[in-house]
Length: 113
Length: 109
Image (cartoon, rainbow over the protein chains, first blue to last red):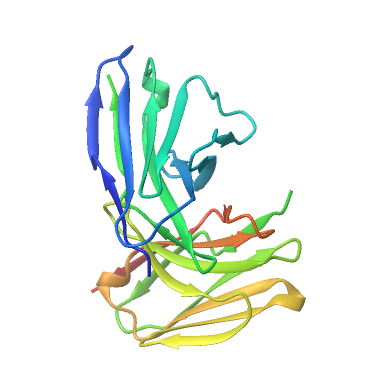
């Protein structure tokens, strides 16, 4: 299946700063990637769909100005958490689909202090 | 929107025991996948199974799409099977997945 690489795996940042998370497709050109968020002891929730060369589409309740998504190439999508607050502390994970099957990156555990 | 319910929410097994995890969904789906989330958070693909039955070693899965449920069987469980098992469905051909709440499995030696 598709190989998705996500970086960093863990990041701690100060409140008010921005953090960029990268999601790379290593063996497949992905016109679409997906970003999910998982709070502790909870399930995964889709945040947004990243579209190569066009604007991302966000799920209801997700602030597009806070979670900036860029998908400038067929192999890289980035999620930037702007002006991070402690409530943004979560596990962020990206995915892409190959032949309709979803494959996930390793995830990024963000802690905002 | 579609609802995905997994049961049981928690399961404790003795090593060597068998178990069945269930996933019910409230509407027809395009696809269904089972994942194992390891302690580091990584999601491991177990099965891509919109319908029918598949087996992979000690694991097997069955999806009955007409009755809107899927089952994951774990036989001869091992401590390394511990973790959270998620069922996720794709309601339409968009690639977006809706996850159940997961089953947390603990296998004791």
